[in-house]
Length: 125
Image 1: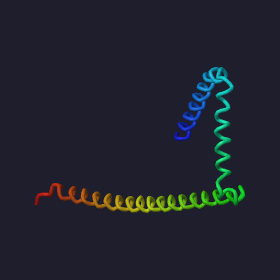
Image 2: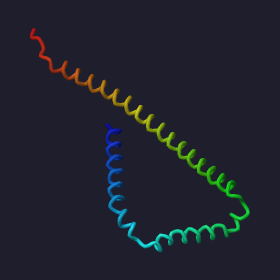
Image 3: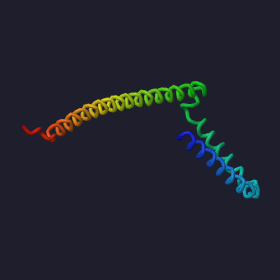
Image 4: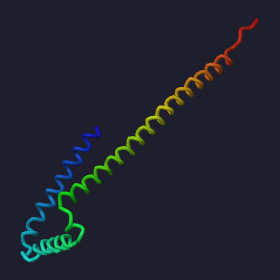
């Protein structure tokens, strides 16, 4: 059921994006060519500034990328460890709760049986 809802949301979202894009394509094609280059100049300015930083000049791009990826990997492992800890806690709580509910069930059932036995009419002698 949940998967069906997710699929419906995905399909409707993609349909909405498609409709929006189809409506905006004519507007985008009418824009002058000068405005398109603004993003490119901004990107080129940023790349020049990034390359100008002395830390990035001394290291290669591959080693920089390795450092970033290793930090991301460590972060994901920490997150995975924390979520597994939370999941284990939830499982133990649910198990304790289930045991407690079962104990109460039998106590309540025994209490009801005693009440029924006490309310029985006694035979007259």
